[in-house]
Amino acid sequence: MNNSTLKLELLFIDRKQIVEDITRVASANDLNIISMEVENKDEKTLIYIETKSSRFSPSNKTIIKCLKQISDLVEITHIHSMPQEIRERRLKVVLDSISDGILSIDKFGYITFINRVAKNMLGWNHLSVLGKKISSLPMENYDLIECLKGKSFQNKKRNVITPNGRFQFFSAGVPIKDITGKITGAIKIMRNMKELKALADEVTYPSQHTFSDIIGKSASIMDAISFAQKIAVSSSIVSIRGESGTGKELFARAIHTQSAVSDEFVAVNCASLPVSLLESELFGYEKGSFTGARKKGKQGLFEIADNGTLFLDEIADMPMGAQAKILRVIQEKSVRRIGGVKEIPVNTRVITATSRLIEQMIKDNTFREDLYYRINVLPIHVPPLKERYEDIPLLVDHFLSRAAIKVGIKPKKLSDTAMKKLLNHNWPGNIRELKNVIERGSIISDKDIIDENSIIFGHDIESTIRGLEAIPSNDLENSSLKARVGSYEKQIIKSTLTKHPSIRKSAKALNISHTTILNKMKKYGLTTK
Image (cartoon, rainbow, N blue to C red; front, side, top):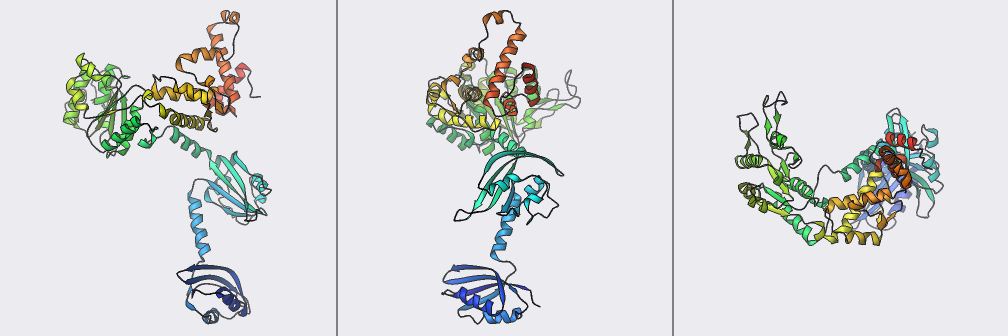
């Protein structure tokens, strides 16, 4: 009894009726054709065929001899795998390497494919599930069976506990249809919520910034980007000038990313550190240098940024004594810790930034002229928002998307009147102010379209919060400060709950924990109904 399979590649000079001739040979030798693929190229025809012998079939040697009798056959070769098998294996490798879980069934509900991630999510690692009916397996998957009736679903949240642990994921399912529109199966894709959150965090708070992260198409911002890209590979000091909130640190980080330096980006705001701490933070100190010093001493930021970039933000606010030491480090390329005598070599790329007019400070003897000329080698001017109004719509779309990602909703849009209100503002706080206005509008507005009433600038915030719900003046007069604050807090939480689909998303919008908002809802007698 001969039940062997035979896989062959046959090369023919192209002509008609080749398939019919092969089929005749197969029939004459009582062979069952399992699969056949035809490929035409360069006036040649390639036939891939897999056959299975019956008990009446001759030997493989005889079968090949019969095939060789077909006219125009150039070559016949044994193969280990059919092209379709190779494609399926490649696809499986690809689908097993992605982070989404993928599960498909045929029209009868039998599993036709499942990748490694889906098996792990559903706790089926040790089960042989291919060919099994999905309804017979542990874990409820009726949503995919419903797809066989023509239904589909998107972003369905699932929370499952399996032997592999607890998994939270969003799933989407669609029916599979053939060319006639008939349903032949269904497929489900599952996205791990932890990975989605990590992706959202990277979009919202990216660990690396590039010049593509700088939003804008105006001539002024494009000129600044072009110059910054050109000088990024240089080791010379860069001085970034611009008003507060224009994005000077974003430029510094983009320069660092595109530069040749290999180590980390270290940023310090010279205006935010007390004078007593500034030098110890920048230059470090040896053990026992002063009361409260660490026993083992401490590296300064110049050392930490060795072979990397040190960003000195608001350098103009640095005291004159520290300015002199900064100049020495830049010139000597070495640093001496407080209380130390040893010179420590540092190869640190320095980028400075300021929103102040240093030239006037030099005249006022509040900034060292020699340091000015040392850091002003490659100056970049970052334009204020009032000089790039055409970029406001692009920035608005960007901030709306970021706001939506934070709470997991579809990005909102701005009405024409809201956009006009933005374009008529003078933006003293620049892009930082615009970001705050857009995030505030996304939270306040309970509609998909944000109107001008939800566009609130800094000086209007207090009056707007009061207007969330008017409280009779006599009640206010007779209330304590704690009661008044509580009343405002209640209205803010109540308003936020009506704008978001879940309590958890409302908590995210208010930047408080899920437990905190539940406690406050209980305190104020609020519900989501």
